[in-house]
Length: 180
Image (cartoon, helix red, strand yellow):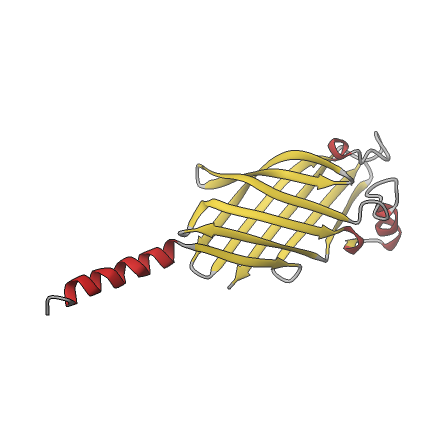
């Protein structure tokens, strides 16, 4: 009976260690949606990206340890009109022929009130800039969810076609629902 308590304690420690270990999720267009809304004085257009790949990982169910590495296939850009979709892929906007991929790599996730602030580097149109955005995050066990709505200034990535006719800020939405 002397070995029962140490064995149970040891098993409890191992269970805690495995719970606190790294949990990794594969991200794809099936479980991760990135959409945008661009506006102009006469209205707006909605769109997004159908294809992306990447990973998200965290340690010990702690969202502040989250790390994202996501690559977006810019050829999968879509909008509410085919003509605009083709124009966005042209050198006037994303120049998909020369910049077929965009990328986001997180650098830090920190608690901010009831939400989190995700910071990282966004590469778009061949330019890499630091971005931070608010997010609601739930990380636990075999599930990760993240929802965020924020704006970026398109000119920061040299997407400047239509200056004055198209608003500078573009609204982005990111929704992740990943399971192991």
